[in-house]
Image (cartoon, rainbow, N blue to C red; front, side, top):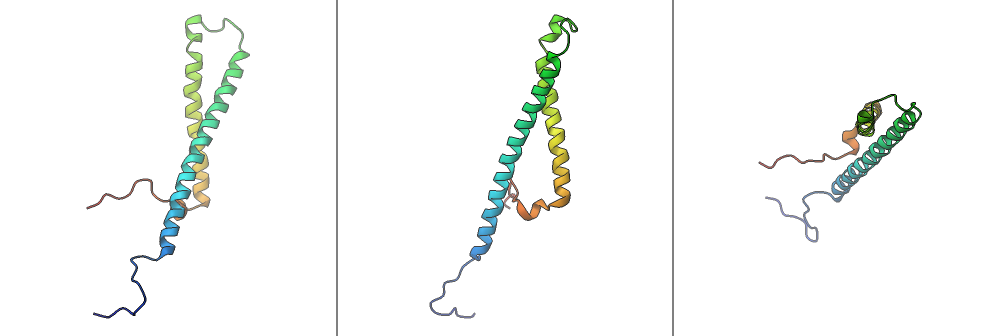
Length: 112
């Protein structure tokens, strides 16, 4: 067994690695927050556009009992459309950026 030199403390990992891990975790948190904000804004835009289009539809085109459900249907369509746009943008971005280099996993591996 070798002796350690006097005056030097042994460390388990270099400080640089922990700084990189913290940076990747911060990137992950910022990415999730940004993606959430994008999805909310995209859903809102699609929902408003659908409502504006529906406002220009002549009255009486749909039965009165169906007109109540139109906003709920438009909301579901807006959520789905924003999901499709988000997925498309994510695929395009994944071609240019390797996410594994910049983002940390959200859930760690199970301890054995």
